[in-house]
Image (cartoon, rainbow, N blue to C red; front, side):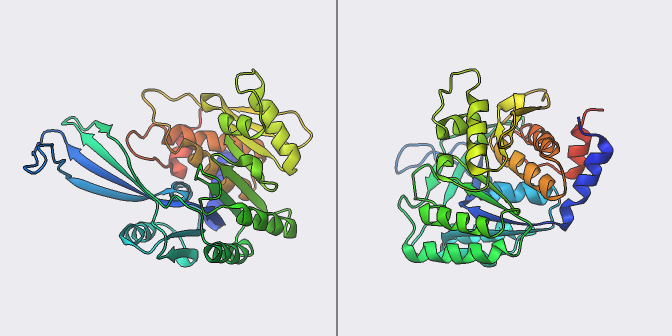
Amino acid sequence: MITAERLKTILAGFPHLTIGLVGDLFLDRYLEIPDDVCEMSIETGLEAYQIARVRNQPGALGTVLNNLAALGVGALIPVTLIGDDGHGFDLLRALRNLPVDPALVIRDPDRLTPTYTKPLRISRDGSCTELNRLDVRVRAPLSEAATQRICEAMTEVWHRVDGLIVLDQINELNWGVVNDTVRAHLETLSRQQPDKLMLIDSRAHLERFRCGSPKGNEIEFTRAAKQDGGASNAAESAASMLANRNLATAFCTVGAKGILVARPGKPVETVPGFPVPGPVDIVGAGDSATSGIVASLLAGASETEAATIGNLVASITVQVIGSTGTATPDQVLKALPQ
């Protein structure tokens, strides 16, 4: 267990960090609908939902940005591509609240800004029920010109930051910001500075990365390593395999059990999670763990300490119901068992 004094020392390093991020930046739009107001549409005969409040916040890569900012990281530089549209305007406006340099957020008039619109039915007691989500995004690959702009921006950011987080959010192969050309360029950059931290988080394509520290959940790891997910040691075996292949430490989240830390050529270590009382909402938990792990490693933490802090951060964010939570340094300190 990490001590409170050691945790304070690591957290104190966060404001001095500059972290780059590459991947899919979404707009998360929450529409709050009070359940005590009902208006029927004359045209359709259906209920016309009455929106009382609209909340916009960065999602996907933006969830990591939110978490890093809440943890007190000094500067964040995302490399991404969004549309030149109203959703993109709202997304960039939401980024103004964070310590983000938006210079490498590329706007492309031929793309839609990826947007998750989440209607929430709000009860009188303040509880909420999420209704069907509405998704906006282009279901096609980036153009060659857009890909080239992303690669040029990655080269620029790689030499400006202490470390880099890569978030491959899109399930369909090569439809997101991180495509095969971008993956190859990441390998080139990693070879130029092999000691610089590059953490790779991919929802569906972790096996296609040949550089950086793999990070994901046990389903993503076992799928990437082609392991039988039902086997008792499948996650450990998968994490070890990907760590050895990439020659970098792998971090595999295993829910409430914590995080597996797999170092090349060494036994896999389980860093236990922290019990959480009451209802939980696991949306964004993996991204919050990523933020804690990367910031801690760059602030001088060991891999085990970083995984512990990742677990602490996630234990706080899962207690936020109906929204994607974040954790502050004070909350992290208070969450550490005495």
